[in-house]
Image (cartoon, rainbow, N blue to C red; front, side, top):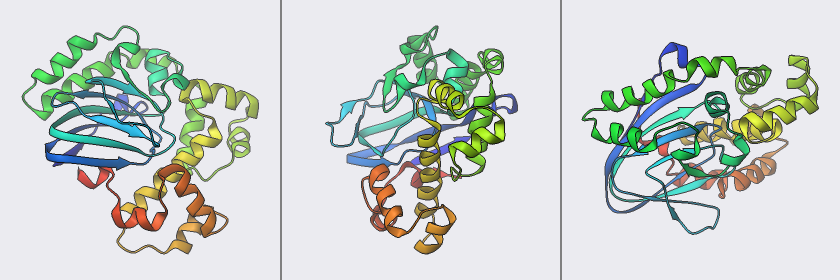
Amino acid sequence: MRYQKFHPAKVLLPFVECYFIWEGEAAESMQVQSPPNSYSSIVFNYADLYKASQHKAEPVVVPRAFVSGQFTSNYTLWLHGKIGLAGMVLRPSALYNFFGVRMSQLVNARVSLSFLPGLPEEILWTAVKNQSSDEGRIRVLEELALSYVTVAKSNLTVIDEAIDYIDASKGCVSVEAVASHLKISRRYLEKKFLEKVGVSPKFYSRIKRFGNLSNKIAHHEKIDWQEIVEEYGFHDQSHLVKEFMEFNRMNPTRYHLVHQELTRFVKQ
């Protein structure tokens, strides 16, 4: 199993977090769980189809080329057969800045790429599928992003600054503090944030905090839970457990022991 990240061109850094290639073989059915991570994505599947589920819903087949927005709790991928995915991990407001779509429509959803105005889904999917190397597939993704970068730059606003401020704080900041720092009203921040990101700034901060927290727990063998409580601004350990149950459907100790999120496959 191989999951490898690739860096975008410098001009794309305000919009693209990274590209990735995920390849492998699931001879038997395999479930991969991932917590919410605050990013959106565009993904092309050039191998066998797979399913995804969230909460207690039945797994559904994922489109071979899709766009997704914010996820508000963990999801599970149901894999069987050949795995071949090439994707673009996007900053929270990038899809809005690129395509002008209202992001609330993409929350907890993987929607066919044709949802995005002007994108030739079949041509792009075929271009990705027909490449014979990682570099070729990443080049298709990068050229797609570069073709929208001028439009995206023109759509940057104070809301993108708000996202950066929340990210820099690892999500441990209040909406009032963000609004005050940027000298805008809370009402304006909340309205425009929902439009560009799909969730409220308060909820986004919680997702960001949880994403940082779960990543730390997943990659450290020994965990000092009280240190985690203090570092991430929880009232106490019961508050930490409540947050974990809401976002990840399991307590933090169990997550630490048995997690199966995508990052375990990352090749640094």
